[in-house]
Length: 194
Image (cartoon, rainbow, N blue to C red; front, top):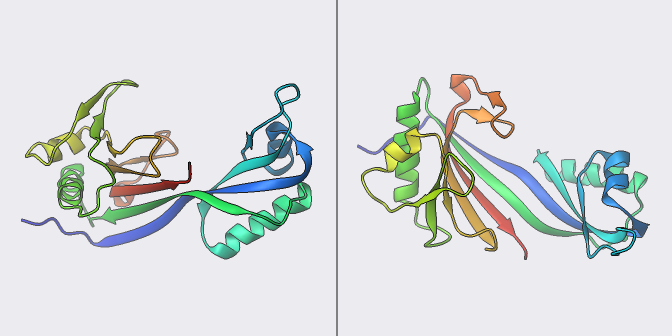
């Protein structure tokens, strides 16, 4: 039986922008002034100051929201006009009304198994400890793998596109337990310019 879902939500989890400041500064100063994490690109080895930064903006609701944040940012840290999008993460959350974790695990397994556009042949179930992984194939154990609530990661960190498939029951990097009606089978597509 093909699992069905009741709700689908698409979200941009984060957006990475490359910006150039009018004068050199450092990431700590930018974060203190704006609350936005800024990673310096090619910082000066002696001072750590840079004029090119990668900014990560979370929970983007619209392009207008992005522009508003950039305008606020530029009012605190003046920018050169050239701004480039260099990464984004797009998430698809499939929810089942009254669904249990086992239902979502079946749905996540179906989404993974029948995805027509996996980004890589490198597919692995992340382990309970950092660095421990196990290769994954489109076998009969996929739903059991998803019941562990650990993600299946597709691709390499150095790839321009990676994916994660998992059952989402927590948020904020595992710190906040979601209400059962917010649980989902989730597919994340991450695009980065390297």
